[in-house]
Length: 513
Image (tube, rainbow, N blue to C red; front, side, top):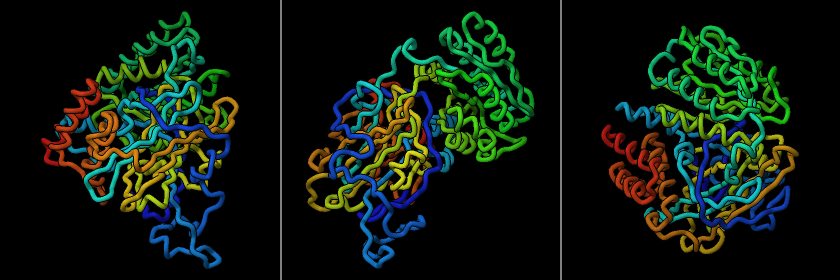
């Protein structure tokens, strides 16, 4: 996690982060959001992205800004911008919970803090139509002049199934030998069966399986009077041998293109433990072979991870490169929520290529760092370059980014302005809207902040404890203190997901992490 000193933010180029569908967030509270015209936020106060980069442009921008000069020998302008593609992945948190439940410590490389934070319901105001609301709030910590600042983005609430476009879903199911273990293929079959009954008559489903080879078990089939045919195909799934994930994804996209429906939402849903051991196992290579389907037809990839042994890195990379996102399920309830509730209700698309840029006021902010989003960061001057990939976001979503911010002693005034930019999913017209935060609006203590803000910081502190970064979050509590906070919040919110967070922290504390 890089610290940016009142100075310059590293120019990290985007890795094509894109979030495709699903996983709702809920909530309601006010936000200090103001709309902006297409192309730029209103007013110079928003610290818009520079039209051209200043100073070092080769990506090596660490160091003291006071020592940096432009090509004419003049001191380069300090950079107070942080830019990233939106992301609603949650797989990292789900897999960590599963690992802790089994009495093991998660591999730090699988811990992505933004996926912990985005796993919980938020309290953001919802916009009336397509687009986003922007909420920016924060609270001071007990560590010098450090505060935690939350940037929250929310889309409109998901409507009823009847209000969305029809769906054309190609399910790519791993039937390799490892999927025969309890909680893998059996979980997928049960969930897919329930989902089939919940989809509309005008929705379509295709089914591809893969082990050593890939096979289209069911071509794109309009449900209508054919649900029995779909159920029969699902019930016939049985585990076989090796895992040729590359063949599965390639055949899945070919099936999706063959059954492409104009005016429908076309998606590939990959259900796997991602333990590829046969054929092409490189995410970039796999996705390159189906790049035409992604680019020309807008078919996105949604990865559903299963299994105690799980190829997190491969699934994450596939989703990143496939304009999609991932989640992880380990229980019947989790699988039912993903397939039977979230998927049918959140097929619609609100925004394409959505990016966020946060501008910190150089008069009030001494340094800052974004928590997580390591694979989602975008070069600052690419914020308004609509050729650069962002995230695809649907209705009912919230996206949260947390920053550690050190203010100048006695600072008073504007602290940060957050702007989100997205393209209309149909016309690809760009839109922006912004929200801002003043230093005077910071809560004096974390415990003074709203409960949902505290859930966000608790999740982030927990991710930090599991991955142990070189620079931890300010005023980090011990696991026992964090567990007490989570239990208090679970009782206060009466939210079973927050109760699950408290249980996960308790499991971690027993391992003496």
